[in-house]
Every structure is written in structure tokens, then in C-alpha cells.
Length: 102
Length: 499
Image (cartoon, rainbow over all chains, first blue to last red; front, side, top):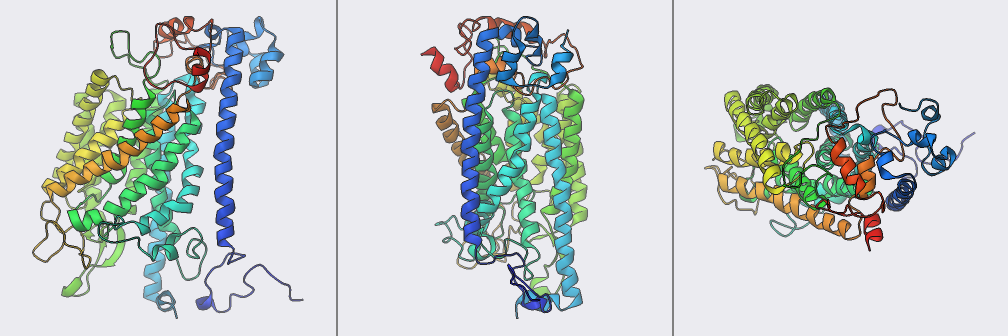
């Protein structure tokens, strides 16, 4: 059974073949979609980064910046603070809770 | 029948085409090591609390510059060799080769070289962006760096390549500009960009004392920085091969004579550039070893500066000339880095401005003198060069290369980056908040990269300095550092609180 395809259906005459990819003729559409996705990515990244810093500053305000410094993470704050609340803000691997730095 | 159809129907012609395709493909793979090296070296240079963000910043160059180089970078190279408006208009054929919707920008039986050439230039783009990445570690926002990476990797450097790194480029045809292995075309433009960004961004907290004294912020791992530099050397070797055309008939009127050529299609040999690559590397290392008093980081950086300085003329220099020029550039880069740091309080975290920018600039200028009178490229009809050889070819000369170095470093490197940095800073989107910088870029998110290591947390001898700075903001965390306000950019979050 011969089926409809998205591009080529024969490699018999390679000298006559140009584009090998499917959907030739739609290149401009691919480019428009790609550019829009990339612009969206940049906007999303900047928004996420701004939000991330807002949350980080909120956390540091609550626990004190000096206590967050030089411990390579925020898990050491668990001795005095509500760790779940901290994790809700910053995430972090579970191992940190089990092996808090001295 | 297409021209390539005829070639691909003849065994020798097809072999030449497929060999060339494979040759560049191999160089691309080798050049990937440059990026690996930059990633390792930057992470090593960062303090422990900033390692993961530093890595992310560097590796995201890969997708962002790749995609934008597909969309418009490659097109700019083919469209703008004439300026436009200097020696002609926009090149109309660029659309067929390099517009992102062109059939040649994908698998195509009538084209076997576009993709590998594109990739070779793209790897140069990654390199340019990575050079800037290292200078601004530990305080730049990721989003801001991504904009600089795209701007440099897919716009400014490739415009300078169209102008000065193409046989038809107006700087080559008019000025006799010569820069065979990109002292200016990649390194000076990236160094100029990095300088602009570090000026607006400002130094890392604690880098300079209250009286302007310079404090050394040590890498968290010197060993990693050195391995990274060695990897960059390896990839750089691939880059040298990538800048050559492996087989071309350069015989002209004297008859057929096949040779390798440089990027301007003028004769050179793989043998010659191999001599010069290694001799300029050696000259740079020998000089840096002495001037840095055997600092391993600067000895290896000096090797890089040596290659970069000699690169403009390494297609033609004698190996001992390459060695001496490399040594001079390396010593100059080291001295200038420390002078600028002391005098202007500019914090270039890895010496990128010096190793790439100053050495690259110097190397272009030197090549203009040493190669004075050599043919720069075959002449293009309708263009009259300022200086010509007896046969009417545009001639390499000191003026052309001096102006070329200025165009690379200042016009295309420094100025656009300074403008964009100022714009981002206006919106508070250039630098991270001070509290985040103090705590570490990884601290609130990724956490500790070395969770099983304990340390005194001196973090390069900075514990006291940073604790003192933190004490001034502990009551208003997002605010400015009272009494210890660092110069440079301020984050939007810090401005909000300080109002």
C-alpha cells in the first residue's frame, strides 16, 4: 500500500534531491515558532530569577543573613528554625537534613 | 545539473568534498574541549558557594548561542562583509546559504559543507561568550549574562568576522587587516565586551578594601582552573585547524598548486601553524612563569595569552618570532591586569580582559608591523585598498591592523556591551542582590556542592570581611550595605528596600 508522506518517498535519484527533511516549504513557520519560543524562554527565565531572589531575601530576612553565610546551604538552620517552612521556600536535597554540617 | 552534482559524480572531486566535510567536522569536535575547559576553569575559580550557578552560567551558552547563531548569526557573516555601505551593500546570496529558512540550513543532498562550517564558527561563538563569562563570575544575574552571550556570540563577534575574517571583508579589502587565528576577531572583541561589563557590574563584595587595596579572592580549586586551561589549549589546537582550508588550488596564473590556506584563502600549511601554535604557547608560558613568580594559574593563562598574541600572524611567522611575540604578549597581559585592577579597581575575576583583550589587541598591532607588505587577500573588483602589493593585492600594514584592533576591542567589543550593561543596570537586572552574593549564589537554591567536606569556611580568607558586610544588612536584609557600599551595579531588589 502506498501511503502519503511528509517529504521524500524515494532515494533513487540522489542528484535530483535537495532538502532531505520533512515538510519542506514550511521553513519560515519553523523559524517563527523557534524565535517565539526562544523569546518566551528568556522572559520566563528572567521572571523566575526575580522570583527566586525575592524568596531568597525573604528567607534571609527571617533567619538572618549571617547565619546563612558560609555553610554551603540552608539546612544548618534546622536546629532553630522550622525546617519545613524553610524548605517550602528553598527546596534542597533530603540528605542535607540527615547530615547537617557540623 | 548542479555544480556539486558534477563534482560528486567524480571520485577525486567527491573525495575532496567529503574529506573537507570530515576535516571540519573533526575540528568542531576538538573545539568542544575549549568549552569543557572554560567550564572547568570557571567553576574552579569560583568560591564553593557559587560553583553551581557558575557552571550553569557557562553551560547555558551552548544552547542559547547555538539557537541564535542558527537564527541570525550565520546570516550576518555572509550578509555583512561589505559593511554594509563601506565597500558595497548587503550580499544578496546570503539568503540562499545562511538565512534560517534556507534549504542549505539543513540536511540537503546538494550541500555537504554548510552545517560543518556553521558549527565551526558557532564553536568560536561559544568561546567568545565564555571569555566574558569568566570575568563576571560570582555576582552577575544569569538572565543578564544570557543577553550578553547572545549579543557577543551571535551578533557582534560575527559582524567583526564578516568585516575582518573573510576574504571579502571590507577591513581586509580596504585596510589590509590581517588576523589569521583571531587575536582580534575573537579575543579582542570578547575582552572589550568583558571590560565593559565588569566596569558597570562593579567588583565582588570585599574585593577591594576601604582604602582601595586589592584583596586576592582565591579560586576554590586551583587544580581545576589549571586543568581547565590545559583543556582550552587542546581545543585551541583544533581551532587552529578549523581556521584553515585544508585543500585549495592556490596556484593562480602559475598553474595548479594545492595547499592549505588561512581563512583569507592565502597559502599556509598545517605544519607551519603547528610550529607556531606550540612555540607561541611556550613563549607565553616561559614569560608568565617569570613575571608571575611561578603562579600556576597565571603560568597557564600566560601560555594562552602567548598563543592569542601570536595568533594574528601565526600563519606566516617564524616559530621563534611566534615565541617572542607570545612571550611579550603574555608578560604584557599579566602586568596590565594587575595595573588596571589596582589603578581603576576593576575586578576581572579570571584575568579574561587581559589574557584575551589586551593580548589580542597587542597581537593584532604587532602583526601589522611584522607582516608589513604581505598580501592580505585576493582583491575584490571595485575595491581599492589603502596599501597594495606590487600585484595589486591589499597589503598588510601597521595602520590597518591598528585601526582594526581598535574596531575589534572598542567599537564592536566595548561599546555595545557598555550600552546593554547600562540598560540592564537601569532596571536593576544586571547584578544579584547583595545578600544573595554574600550568602552565595548556590546557598538558597542548589545548596552545598560539597556536602561531605567541612572547612574553616575562610572562603579565600574572606570570612571576616563578609561577616562584617553582612552585619550591616542583617536588619534590612535586602537593603544596601550601610557604610560598606560596594561600587557598581545594584539589584532591583536592593533598590526596592532602600527606597
